[in-house]
Image 1 (tube, one colour):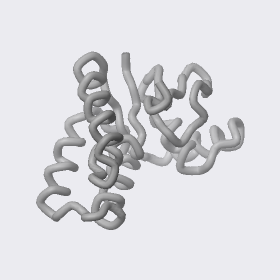
Image 2 (image 1 turned 180 degrees about the vertical axis):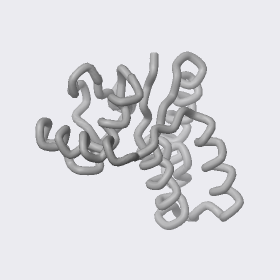
Image 3 (image 1 turned 120 degrees about the vertical axis):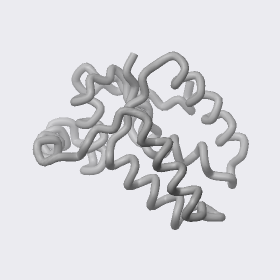
Image 4 (image 1 turned 60 degrees about the horizontal axis):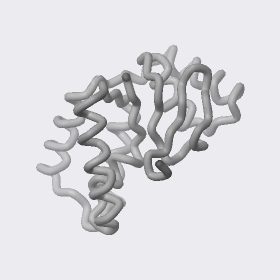
Length: 138
């Protein structure tokens, strides 16, 4: 299975303020990576870098951020290019999605993922053939 993992789940893995949630997500991501293909997008990389450098307490250092981004780049990364943006706009209108959620969903759809793991979407929703699952509710 090809699975897209949204930014918020990666952040939980790194956030030291909620160690139980972080450990749960760490185990879940390890299992997911062992058994499935993980896909992310340039948007996930951009958002993750912003969060770990500014919002995490304590924020990650420059070397840690460099290592994190390099590790994340090892997954399949969908580039946010012009046609993805145009199609995401239509997806947002059709499914009443926020702009940034539509960009994530469109990247997942374009990459052939069957599931989008996120806490930001409605658990159990379908966007075309894409199933949305919040792994924190399972």
